[in-house]
Length: 638
Ligand SMILES: Cc1cc2nc3c(=O)[nH]c(=O)nc-3n(C[C@H](O)[C@H](O)[C@H](O)COP(=O)(O)OP(=O)(O)OC[C@H]3O[C@@H](n4cnc5c(N)ncnc54)[C@H](O)[C@@H]3O)c2cc1C
Image 1 (cartoon, rainbow, N blue to C red):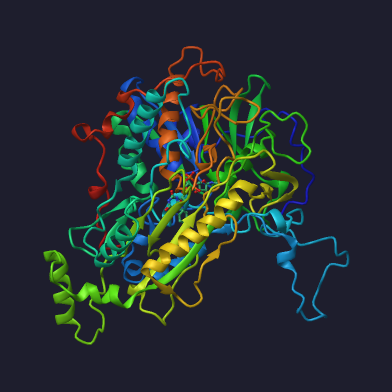
Image 2 (cartoon, protein in one colour):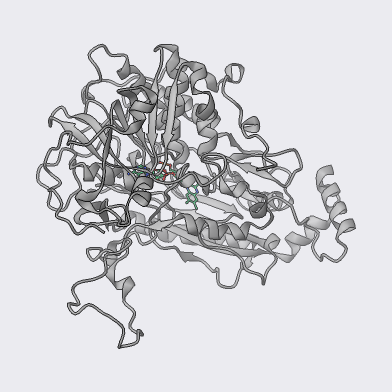
């Protein structure tokens, strides 16, 4: 925690006297085309598109990426749930998720221990609270996002995510990119969603041969004939038909082969790990030109000195590029922009980005777990009229495991069902079994009987709901401490109440509540679908960037991630954020070809569709990308 005096956040700051990062010398590239902060699925989308598609019109696109975390999977950015041990016991993965998440802001009230031995140390001035590791004396408990968390590591949160990839509902969640023609806007989303689905490997049929999936699906389809009950779209594939094993997709699949084969298409790509992008150096205020990304090599800090360097003691480098993309997650993207002096400081005068981390959105979330009804489970063992795969699975299970009282095979894939949001019921639903940071079932009940219900509501982006970044309190990485100011609006508070009733209605059709997991609202932030922090829009006052994701007034700054989504949304947002990044990558590609260099967005310009040529690889006949099924080599020795 730095105790050194900090510069004021609203002072424009150009290049300081720091050296260039060694990557410039190692690569022989004095200026990269594109610098990307963050290696999650969105940073990966920018990298893949630019490196692999750029060659068509430019000789070479040189991309360098900085990731603050380490590579902690053997295959870069791989989903950790692909390990056999977690597929055999999904509850064990809960601990992996918990280990991957760090809280963003902990209010002082959560740090008080009234039962502490009176002789233990306490501050002599009670107004001074601990500020270590996200403890935040300015965080009010009443409007916090208690469970908002971040993941640091190659692949970001996609190394543990649930992989649900629904489309946003038009007219409710889906932002309007092209306002002058509904047909064009529909066509644009169709293009972008199709490409995003190919990039992340979206499927809806990988659980078709699961007994429990069919039991849940049939029961709910019969109960709610008018509600389009359907399989939950997931970014995964089953390793072979009938196999219990699934490969869950992550940023690994988005990166594809660019770690090894960037040069094949004349591109250049390098991902630098343990490298924190702390600030963007810039010139001018309107337009603003980013002239360097200030980075800190955390490994060098770890190995280079017996003292952890703080404040001005830290050694910093610059990475220079023509265009800078910040895709560091919904919290760390505005944090980096705030630390650069662009906005979101407490009482900051005339910020360059006034809308930075205002209008934030979050999802009130309801959860429960049910134990399937007796007659439902018994019906699984009644084989009359069941498909051949079902009969074979139950017969084999009974033959091999005569002691098991249940007809459901041990490795029957989990149910994965959804009832999509509608205008009347504006919430996203997941009726499934999967690991999250909570909801493991423990030893008392057989996991095959348990179904989780997760209902996600929405929230309008209103200016009062925001994140402030403190200039005098820092997180463990010496970045400004986020403070949340978030309260659900009346409208959505009421909808959340109705949502809870809907969830209990659906739960009732399936079974009885698992003791300890009766219907409850979860802590705010737990959905980890924070939105709006760097929202796209059409006007400077209320948005950070235009619908090409280029920041207003900046020549060469782009933003990515769930923070760009300006509308309320209940569905899981990553597919939509990938879609918007695909569009943004095309704009970057266009800017790189401009003879005088990149220029700021024009708020009066009429935006156009992303050309099909930019996403032609998404058509089956043109698939020149490695497919998800053949991406990963088997690894049998070290
Ligand atoms: C348990 C769980 C379940 C989820 N389930 C789903 C789901 O089913 N569907 C869905 O759509 N979404 C889901 N999500 C959310 C999903 O993982 C995120 O939406 C997605 O990963 C966001 O991608 P991103 O690239 O924008 O950010 P992230 O994945 O957060 O990646 C950002 C990266 O930036 C790095 N970084 C941060 N600051 C800096 C800096 N200053 N310098 C350099 N690097 C930096 C971080 O270390 C991180 O690796 C889930 C998440 C979790 C944890």
